[in-house]
Length: 222
Image (cartoon, rainbow, N blue to C red; front, top):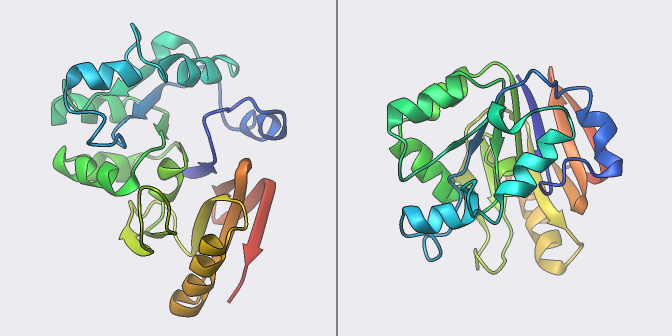
């Protein structure tokens, strides 16, 4: 399994394109696991469609168009829909995919829905490429931390999918005091390296245990 931890869904950014070109192939099938939505904004299928459906989803073209730059056609991309997929149909989309893609949003709610739909096993058995941005990046870790922001007013540790391990990730890093204090706390309490990806300018590739920073990434060691 190769893990790519991103800042945003602009997969064709000049600083990133050359790296992703090594991993994404025109033959690849993609499962977009779109389960990180905020409860206050998405209460039903119509609300979900307004974000991710082909007909009127505000994020649909950005996600599909980004993969198109790597030769991956629209018909090769399937979205896991919390409101219309059954656990069996969602698992089938994951099992048929070469690439799993986790969009941003709320990582803890995404984990809740993954568990609810029985998808932890199918995701863990995936042997291909796993990508995600923001929430979809940190959720790939065994344990992740979140520094205080508008969605999470207090610092916290959370359980992730455990697809990669051995470090922590501070996403959207801008050097603000809350982020720096969160990094110091992780270094002190967990004794593990923290990577901080600059907001929309950094990423990590974890391939065979090797961690490759891409773009603007800071490393903090205990």
